[in-house]
Image (cartoon, rainbow, N blue to C red):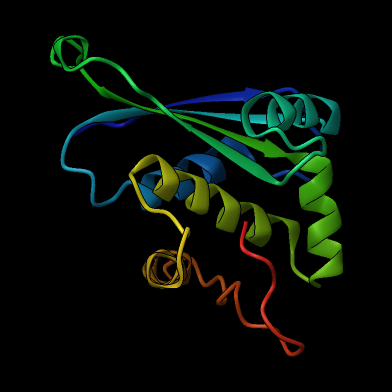
Length: 162
């Protein structure tokens, strides 16, 4: 099975992981997908993320990650060579700020939120504690493959869920 990844960089600086890293993280999060699928990842500035967050969630601030699952009619999906999962948008300035505040490497934080977004595209959610526990364990397991520590462990309590 072949997954397709489209990477769109509106922000591209030397401190950001390269496309090979982004691809490894997305493919790792899609490991359990039995059907070939397509995902778009977009790295953006705060202004674009704030506009998206306002338009789609009614919240007027830049957030760290947004996931937009594809919602296509089954008759169209059946004709596609890959299942279109959807889009993940990462706000680079917010990720940088959070990484500093949480004393994390930017790459590790980005990997976590990219995996988090991929899981949302696959139907995982954290609307209640039971769903959150399942999603968090999945994230922790996937990130551990790359030696990234549990992103939910902190000395002074848990960080807010993405």
